[in-house]
Amino acid sequence: MEASTEFSLRPLMDGFGVEMRDVDLATCGPDVHRAVVETFDRHGVMVIRDQRLSPHDQMRFTNAFGTPEENPRREYTLPDIPEIYVISNKIVDGRKIGDHQAGQGWHTDSSFLAEPVKCTMLYAMEVPDEGSDTLLADLCAAWNALPPERQAELDGLQVQHSWRALMELKKVYLAPDDNTIPDVVHPMVRAHPADGRKALWVSTGTTRGIVGMPNPQGLDLLDELVAFATQDRFVYRHKWHVGDVLIWDNRCTLHTGTPFDLSKYKRHVHRTWVRGDRPN
Image (cartoon, rainbow, N blue to C red; front, side):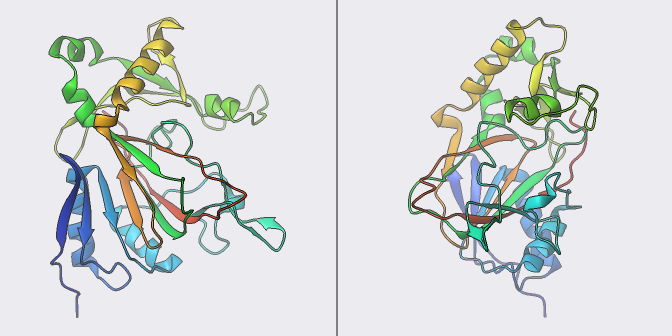
């Protein structure tokens, strides 16, 4: 029998994010999944606590949001489920099992793709007692807070996003002719496909500048807008507990992780992505 679709909701912030209660993701079925996805599309961020998920449970839930996206770094994926990326500083049998640096710096996942990922899901199995918070910025609230004349100046601008720029930032060597993922251009102001609400869709780490605007002027403007969008009034800080599932909408949020003492604490998180569409 299908588990009940009845659940309760608690806002994370005024107008941004929601905690969903009375849901067991390991046992619920398609009707509950559909209700979760519909709720998620309206809120930007969703937290579901006290879960106990196997990797297959997480993949089943991920599939409810769409087609899972592949991970480019296969060395940190589960051997039998490469769609699950391991974020961890644990060492098992002398081998690093995960990426302990994932998620640093304000960004939106895979903005360097022609079709950036729709949403990101993290499931926590071990978390530090302090640090490793995830911060999420509401880009729709940031856009709505801009004066109309500033909105008019920004709407229509386009940003060049670059995988190569990200690799340069991470100091990963690429051959001069390596064009594995070519640069893409996306709108600075993005409309959400669920309801058309607008987001100030800026990022760091993957941006080369603004089309038609010389640097450093273009990069300075992007930095200014990221600083505006990540003010405390727009940001939800997620403090992790074991069993938390955190899902955010890359179409209308920025996120970053906070550091923790790698020598003192262990972190072990499974991440999945869902394929998105071309921003417009």
